[in-house]
Image 1 (cartoon, rainbow, N blue to C red):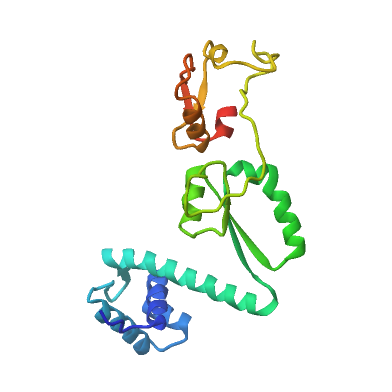
Image 2 (image 1 turned 45 degrees about the vertical axis):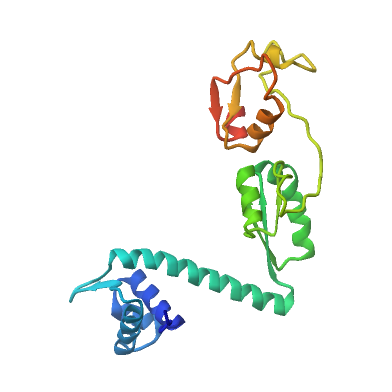
Length: 233
């Protein structure tokens, strides 16, 4: 299908969708009302659908118009971000770095790194996508982040992995718990007490399930949470 509309037409549609008035939208874009109306008509003719319901008193979006508005808003936001990034990089080393990571890495490691990075490159914007381990992996795989900090996924063939550190899993309990004074506990010992686990969407749960799949006497959780911080609470 030939595209018979342009960026000005999309901006006109967004303006009237936001302001619910042809007059206010035309004023906001500094064009006359007849010229503004022609932009909307051109856009609707090109798409072959009615995007707006117009009466003498008000303007509202049709159901198709509401869906189209969400997509146009995202499109224009992405375009603005891209243009600002290109303009910044071409000027004074401005740009954007997107990092996908599990939340714990932000708290323990990444905040200090970002602080030092900002001192060195003050005009580069850092976007942090803190999410579950599985989502971090898919975000990097889809190219939506420049890199990720994670603890699962080394089997992904299309992603390069570099080990940064190694941590042990621990059992968390209150200081007055019978197991608190032990330096090491077995899963059989843990099975004697109420056990809380993270849900199956968690990367931690995936690692534990894989490591303990054939272990006898493994405790069965009676509580389950989405996040480790919730579990500790």
